[in-house]
Each structure stands twice: as C-alpha cells, then as structure tokens.
Amino acid sequence: MKPNKVFFALITLIIFAASGCSISSIKENNDILNGSFWKNQALQDIIPYWTQHALDHDNGAFITNLDREWNQFNGTDKFPGMISRHIFSYSVAFLLTGDEKYIEIASETVDFLLEHAWDKDYGGWFDTLNEKGNPVRLTKNYFMQTYSNTGLAMYYFVTHDPKVLQYIEKSNNIMETKRWDNKWGGYCSVLNQDLSVKSCIKSIGIQVSPVSGYLIYLYLATREGKYLEQMERIMDLILARMQDPETEWILEAFDREWNIKDDASKSRVHIGGNIEVAWMLYRLYLITGKKDYIERLESLTEKIVKWGFNKETGVWYDTLEISDPSIHKDSSVWWIQAYGNMYNLYLYRIFHDDKYIECFKKGANFWNNYFIDKEFGDTFISTYANGKMRDGTKAHSSKTSYHSMEHSLLNYLCLDLWKNKKEVELNFLITSPKKGQKLYPLPIEDKNIKLKKVIINGKTWKDFNKEEAYVNLPELQKINIKAFLSQ
Image 1 (cartoon, rainbow, N blue to C red):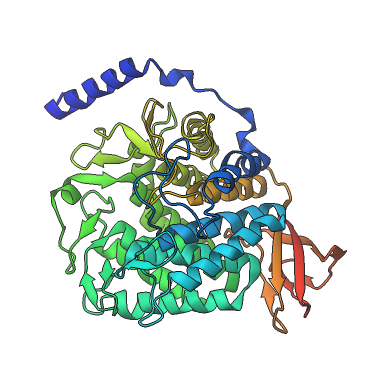
Image 2: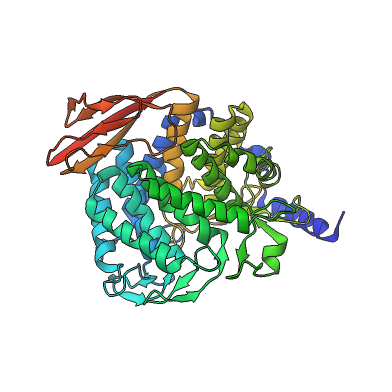
C-alpha cells in the first residue's frame, strides 16, 4: 500500500470512530423512486425554510450568510448570482404547485436584481452589492455573471416575461463578445467594470456553467437554435482542450493558452466538474440525437461511476487522485451529491439499464439521510463519506436554495416520466403573450414525452400540439396554465 493510501485509510478510520456512526446505518426509503417524494421534499423540507428565514424583508431579496440554525453571520453583502439562484427556486416552486405566492416572491426578487445588480453604464452584473443593493465590487467574475442568468432563465421559462429575456440576452452577449477569448477559445474568468479582461483562468466551472446554469433552460423554453449552437461549441471545446488524452478525465484549471494551471490541476480530479460535463453532454444528446456524444463519453462515464461513486454507501466523492483514483477526499458536498443523483437518472434514460436506478437509490438515500437537515431544514453544505456532518452552513456566497430545488424538480420529472410512466403536472403564469407565441412546458429533454392536456384559466384548452409538446397561447392579459405531460 502506498504511504498516501495508508494516510487516507487512517484518516477514514479516525473519522468513523469519532463520529460513532457507521454508514451501514443508512435507512432506505422506499418512496424515493416516486416523483411525488421529491416534489414534497421541495415544498416541505427546502423552500419553506428559505421563505421563513432568508427573505430580507427590510432591504429586499435574500440574506446571504446563514449558519445551520439560520442565524446571519460573516457580513451583510449580497451577490447577484445568489439572488438569481433564489429566483430559480421560487420559479420552480410555482412550476410544481401553481401557488402564486411563490411567483410573487420570484417577481419581487427579479425586480431587485434588475434594479440593483445590472451595471447601467457598461452592462453586466456586478460581483457584490451591500445589503441595500448598492454595488461594492464592480468587477464581473464568471460565477456571478453566469448565475445571475440562472434564475432569470427559469423565471422566463415559467412566465415568458420579455423584459427578463432582454437582460439574459444582453448578459449572454457580454459572455460571447467580451468574456470569450477569440484567440485561444474559452471564457475568461474575470472582467473589469468596463468589460475589459482582468483575468483569464479557464476552469471547468467557467466553461460549463453557462450551459448547466442557463443555456439549457433557455433553449428548452425558446427552442432557439443559437442557444443550442452555443452549448455545442462550449462542450466541444471542453472535450478538445480540457480532457486529458491519457486518463480521459476532464482536468480542472488552465491558463489563457490552455496550459495546466497548477500542480493540483495535474494531480487531482474534481468529480463534480466531470459529472457536470458528462451530464450536459448527455442532455445535448437527447436534444440532437448525435451519437458522437455517447461514443465520446463512454470511457469517461465508466470512470466517473467507478471511482467517483461508492456503490455500497451512495456517496459521491469530492476529488480523486489522478495517479490512483482509489484515493479520494473523504467527503462530499451537497451540489455534487445532487448532480450525481440526477446524472444517474439520465444514464438510466439513455441506456435503459436498471443498474443506474439502483445507483440513484443509493445516492438518494445518502442525500436524504445525511444531507437533508432534519432538525433545521434544507441541506448541509458538506458531509464526510460516513455521513457525519462536515459543514452545516445554510447559505453563503455560493450556496442557496438552487441546487436542492433543481434536484427535486428533475427527480420528480425524470422518475415519473421515465421510470414510473406517470403523468406530471406543471404550472405557468404568462402575461400578455404575443400573437402566435408558443409555450414549451417541459424542462427536460425528451422528444418521446407528449402533451396530454392543457387547462388555461380554469378551462380546457384544445389548441396545442400533442406530439411536439407545445401550447399555442391565446392573446389574453393573464394566463394561468396547467400542462399535463406523459409518455
């Protein structure tokens, strides 16, 4: 056994002993394969706690830094990308329920974001605001630029608000014309206020987050070919520039000219980033039908599941050693566990193999037993591989309600549509649509799902395309829509 393997093994034993908790104590919940389980989790275990504890009733939007018990700590600054992630969550809550209290919170938060976070002089989203919404950091890093679009994209999916689409378009245009490196390709990491490049590190997150964060939902809402073309260009570049030809892992960070940035990027694999890349490529496959994506992913998929996922316990690891992938960090974080679960459902859809449902069950049970905070609500940031809480913080500059709510939404849809062959119901609130405007109500990629029934303002609506799953919208001032979809 190598010395570092001995070290990792000893650390693992120490953690197990200190916790007094064995992973064998995982409780299996037989309901986790029902979509309703995840819908209920969103509406009972996640969103109520954010509504109760995180809304900033005095200043607007949401409080950023909250500890496990929802006490504010570590300053009062707010971050546009995090504000928008909450918009995503409350849009999802409305999508699942039709309860207008959720879309009202989303709408008020949209107004705060557009009023305070957009740079009216140069364009783009500021990095940081104070608690009242005044900008305090004027640079524009990729994280806030990308995720400020995330909630707006889901809000647009639910409402078709043209003003919101305009801001997404303006922001995405900055991504394409100012952040994109015309010489070497790829997105640069940080822009100055005037949109000149300040830093051009190129990591997995910088490249793939526009796809997973907003482009995929924007395309599903609009079916505009330009968004699909952008996603394909990004993903092709990741495979060409970031995939190690020897190990086939997607490596973490590069400089502007695509040289490996540091020793950590040479020696370690970030499992979350690899899942995210593979998952987005599978979603593009379901849209395009291009088998090249499947072929290019075959080896990477095998490695991700073999080394990144513990099939006995259901935990998704954080990082691995490239030289020996059996050596891993003995912890996971909430978004990696969520992505891994959703990734397994997509593998099941594409390969029709029940082993991926079994993997999903393991990962979902780990999530429910160890990431969901049964005492104070929502999720922990991280746990050790044995399930012991590692960091119980509820909110900070990169954690909100978003990942948990996306996890609930996609688990609900994927399980009931793909595995259980059940009908799902989704809700929309459209204001003053244009003549001939269409609503595509499905936020996942599957041409086999049909639109079975539509109710508009409480009455059955007949003008929809069952096979292509879209609604021809009437010219009314306000349209409440219930869409029912199934195979």
